[in-house]
Image (cartoon, rainbow, N blue to C red; front, side):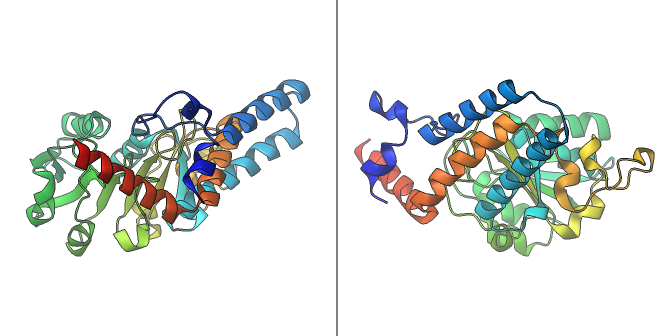
Length: 293
């Protein structure tokens, strides 16, 4: 795809140079239309009945598949969340962390990761060790229970040494708020166990959207911190808390038709442009800006 064709799909670019995708991505026209159509449909037809609820589930499944495609994994390995921090909290609350366990993190982390780590230290007695971002792989030691850090630093734009971290064999939780959509991602190649993502940044989705990749081998190690209707394999026996298949057990609440429709439309725009083109274009423009400063 050429740049003018791509840019024409984002109304905000008609009057400004948009440089805020690291906080809130620009909204493509197709996503605006999808969100409007979804709200009008719910208002016109009502929000009740089997067909309505089945439609919500189908939309959520499509959104899950869309995120999975960008992550390079299967849909059943993806939970739908409301933010990167939701995913981080799911992991830190679900793991059997105990007093004295060490979590290794870096000096370039966002409060959205640091606040949950602070809670784990205060409420569960874990030890937090903070090291320079570029040196984290070399700081893993035998007492390290978990590495929790950004894939791409929000402060400097550095990309963490994922290969060296994966080689340590220590469970890895990556904050992917500044990675997914901005740089190529394949969670299998990264070797991470948990990958927490935002939908409203580089994926141009709505606020309150995101996802969490959970490696299948870690499913049984992770308790469901806040079980819900969607967490259950059998909703007729909720007290038994038998989890549904895959990472969907960690979904946050019942799916939103509006968020799913918007997220899907935005993902479609980016996919049609081509992820390789999107990533190369972002890197090229960032490089030009850096050279001119």
